[in-house]
Image (cartoon, rainbow, N blue to C red):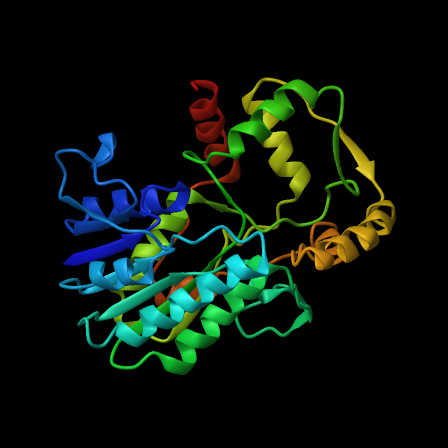
Length: 321
């Protein structure tokens, strides 16, 4: 099946592309660069030059494909950038039917579910607190556009929890920070003993691919986490153990972070940037447990990585770089 992927050279997208190729798909990448990435040379990959900032190039890339995974995004620092992503989604949805796309998969975010009103939360659980930063607002609005306006094409929406694994531009910094600061003390909101929703990137990629393949997934939204009740401290400890070190947490009371967050919120509004800092302090300082039962049942998906195994692989990858 001919498949279009945006964001196919990024952290999550690159793993999705590898999973698609392993299943025999012909993959078309939308990329600002015309060259095929080194790791994909000799494989069933076509590169179409384009830019998410140019909706016309995305629409052109949709011609002749049956399956479309929209993983890429324009960086969302300001409201104007977030609105570009929303307008792009509108253009994509308008053209799905005329371009002959059979299934459209959008990678959203678990932050759209907000801080849930009960645990474990499923896809229908009402949020106790809705996050209003630009990133979450854009993801939420895109989900609404898909549900309201998609015609003549099936769709599925995937909401990943915070993702760890190989290939990120940022997780290497976390590994380095724990290697340097772990024995001294890693600052974190509270004691880091609250439940953290996490998902390993290769497990996530398989679920995303299945969302485009399984007939039962049509019209569905999936919370994608490993479903386990581990904490942030468990995650940091797993990294430290893979480094053969120990880690201690320097607890920062959430109230101390909320007070400076108030002027930050006012400052960000002045410059048309919305970080929603107060709610994010709340978000990372309390239990967040999301059920993945729908993904397991509908997608016939099973996370394969334990936290320890996934972290060991991640640490080994970043230490080589």
